[in-house]
Length: 532
Image 1 (tube, rainbow, N blue to C red):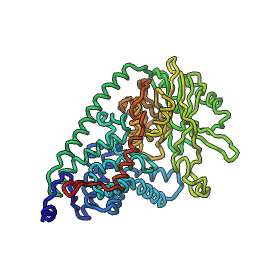
Image 2 (image 1 turned 45 degrees about the vertical axis):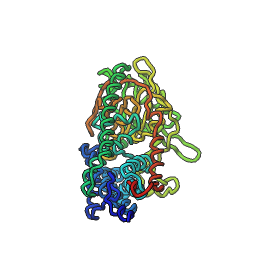
Image 3 (image 1 turned 60 degrees about the horizontal axis):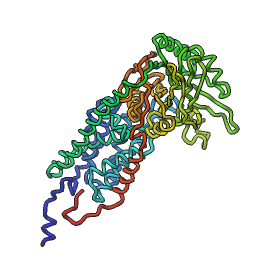
Image 4 (image 1 turned 30 degrees about the vertical axis):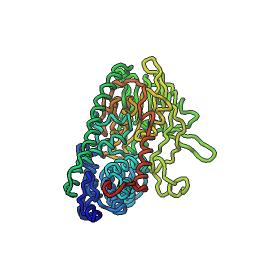
């Protein structure tokens, strides 16, 4: 009799014991809608308030689903989001692969489908964890952190980058990188989903969940205000220099076909910056397009490029050498003093697939015949920073080339190695065309300034070039696809952060926790304590 009463007693768990499934058409619509909201709220589109509800339709659609069904809902959601967010892959493939239109579309969709699997794994981990009796909100948060950290991507992105224009919301990056910022936004999504779920499941609101999510958001705002104030004070006390960024805006093929014009354009814009009082000038990736043998690049650059500038400079170049096994090409950043002497070099380590190398191209050389426009660059091996005298004092500068600036872990490694006073990124986003990619790239790069509380100077061939302060705010920026130069103040700063010290180790622990949720059943004391 007692057992029957217990079975008949209504569930009162604040986080529903038996999640109610919505019908499949609504579930599919929810996955699609979440994908649309995600990329509309993301950098490039920048309707950032949508980030607070982007996961809500997907989260509601997942309730009561099996891990298999959840996986496919997540895959659909990820595909929609990635096709919207990474449509510019078509331009890159068209420019570099040499493939026809059909193959470029096929590979774009294939890459987007693969990248979208990150959300498929997120949803699978969520369904597994809930089925094993763990609290569903905690499971979803852990799964989001795990997939943002661990899922392999060709083009990295983080949910938190959607609010890059709101400095108050992103300061927590110096504690936990972009993943922490993402989790605060995901928590807000869970809070907005709770009234919907309570109505669907015909239960009271989980006020504890709302309180925890609300507290997380308020604490994040308070921390943001505190850190902005503290960092502003540090910036005010730091040594300052006027740094110029040169945006040559050379067409993708024009750079190769008319390298002399590119050099003339960069020299002319640099002369303008020098007259305005520039103490250091930064050019973009491969702004000097002449491929120079390694044994003579310093002399060549002095004679042809830097000897006439009259100001310290950092610029991109291509250096090559002949090894026994093959010819090796390097995408390099060089630094020269005011006299034009080349003092140091950094070779890019994270190469761009299809643009700088072909995946499996060394194993299957025939791939390069099928994709004749793809590069065959080699990875650099040294993390040494560049050093140059600015306003009478030697400055230590860490340079990141192209997409290296969107990798928090790599930037953490290179900053810890070199302990620089300034971060510089040189890149060329022209191969993506007039798309949202340059804005997405800038949004992701801005987090490096916050994570390490250092200024970031970005010079790109076609935009967006920018100076970003240690709070992630734009000091100066250029217009896309315009040849122009900008001059702005930069502060030389040092000083570690929690994220700089711990890196992603806490998120590795959370990832293990997520796996534990997926594979270890929660122990309960009996029917009365059976809560999700």
